[in-house]
Length: 517
Ligand code: GLU
Image (cartoon, rainbow, N blue to C red; front, side):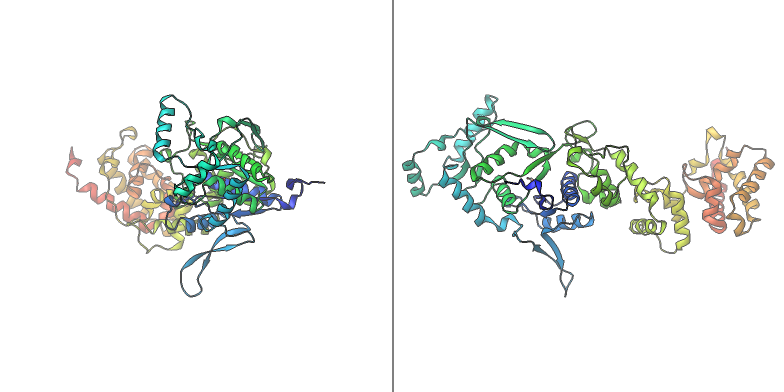
């Protein structure tokens, strides 16, 4: 009996086959993640293969960067390229593991050449001697007539003698796949269902360029076959290429893998996800302080859902829940607001010491940041800021005023018409509050009820409203118009720091000439 590969669970093998562009696109991460989840769920294997046949697009360090980013994101694999650190230096080098290497296409040229020749000899491919000029002219004509760009198959009809004569002349040529014109090329996509293409509408794809290097299509199919890939999971943008791949499998007489084309990623306005509307590189999100687990969780839900309302999953839980049949066909919107929400959720659940280390790592790069604060103060401040953070870098704005030593006060903040606060009231409120707070000891400052009681008395004595006294104190402590409440600020900043700031503000107000008006 002939068993389909898919019938034998432990033989499932997927691959992530990126072209190294210099960064990992969020769509690439989703492909890698789904390939990982599907393989792991089915006790199968995942391969990381580098598709670098387009040497014109070579980017120094791109392969290393890809491997590193996948590693950071926690996506491990069973075969392919890895980074290994030198024993004697800090150098990292790319190594390969697995029985089907090399996993770097630029090292496999000989293999592709052999297979291209096999197709030639069997009549499934042909040499095309058309010049660049001819092809360009053809494209222009087609453009002008609003026809899809396609090779007119002139060289498909050359006689043996004509071909021999050209080869003898040393004319350069490419090798094209001969798509059976009368055929209907069909396959069953695991996500999109039955898909059909008419043969005569498919271009005779170039398989080998004139320099003897393969195109993506040939290399991709040959490698998926030789590496025994059972499931090709990739973005929908590759769907138009798939009939060419199917034709190749048929020409070679190879069993086809199961294809699963993932829905497009869209901007909120339903256009294709683009750099213009936000970051697309995973590395950019990490650099901005997004939590990798949150990013992975968010990406997992771009086109897949577990069929319940649940949205928070770690990698292990995703692996348990993942199912190809729950991937949607419709484009998936990359909603930054949702990513922020999710990241905030992860952030608030992080152990505070861990969060503090991450945030410290970001803050210490700020030029205003100085190091003579103690852990306790830093953590107390962070606890206050945490609820309003969605990502690590938000701490910069939320914690800055707690941590800087000197303010360049924005005097206008001491005037608040809505609260009926002018400079005179600010000055008086600060003066009286200073006297009242001086009388408290450091422990009292830790008790919000205590500072509240004292300041409410000041309010009563002055015959003012609460806000008229509390507003100037808030500004004195923070130099901001939005901040946590005054009593929380006093508790976290403590007696010494709070009074110092209030004195600084009071002094400023006494020196202002406009005060008299
Ligand atoms: N090298 C292709 C890419 O960069 C792979 C497409 C595929 O998975 O077949 O996305």
